[in-house]
Image 1: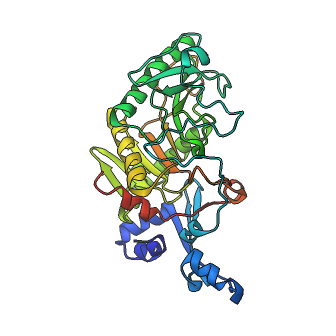
Image 2: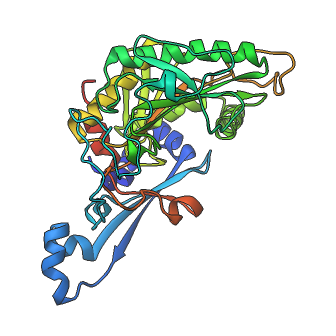
Image 3: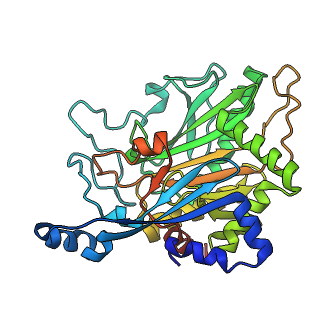
Length: 369
């Protein structure tokens, strides 16, 4: 399957399934044409494979009608020339990302966190393979960094992911006791420099928001409730089902997942769980390992969002309806650590995200996880 096959695949669905798909997603196939001058032909063939593929390109535009998120898919863009940063080390699963980028760069400030990082006022939480530190440049009242003992972001194991989630929950309990209105946990991992990490040593970010959940999570809750009220079915059940109908869904044990058509970045993979537990950790591990080992993933982001962990009568939005809202883990590909340009441009920020990879290629990498 290719993403350009999607419009025809939708037409072939049984009526009930096609109607369900089309109430969530609008899919359009656009054709873009250009003319390659003779002086460019040899270069185009070397770079893109053929002149014909460049002179007639097909772009798939997907819009989620419920959330008004969307993506523009053109896998040919992955072959376009990209500047490389010669000073950034090549990352692989056997080479640690702790080399200095320049003479002014501290190679690993997380190597000795007890002496080089701050404590939360309620102390640190130590796991088997990680330790928390208070975030010295805070983005919320209760936020921490979960420093991994293993500095290489690609050298993770199943035991690591389980411990990272368990330690995060213990930190959240301590943070909630310090601030009873803090109850909305997010778990975020910028995998490597390409993933947005400011420090190369592998680490995750933890936040425990007060009153209402973080804006994007609250927005998703609102649209899911609206969908359920309008159509009489669960938005998340239907979201998985429509992806499964077009070959982008999967299961991992009792958990469901899919490669998102309204992608924020390439390989935008959702896993729907019940808790921040070992089952979810195992699924995230297997998805990440499949992308690293089979698809060459080198820079990535992982995010986990969920309903409130704690109830508190003083908190705002206390009567908010979270029924049917799963714990959602997402994995996205952030591209090569050696790329000198950003993987996010003005089109992504102001209009609709542009994705240079085929979601069916990502789904293929997840076979038999």
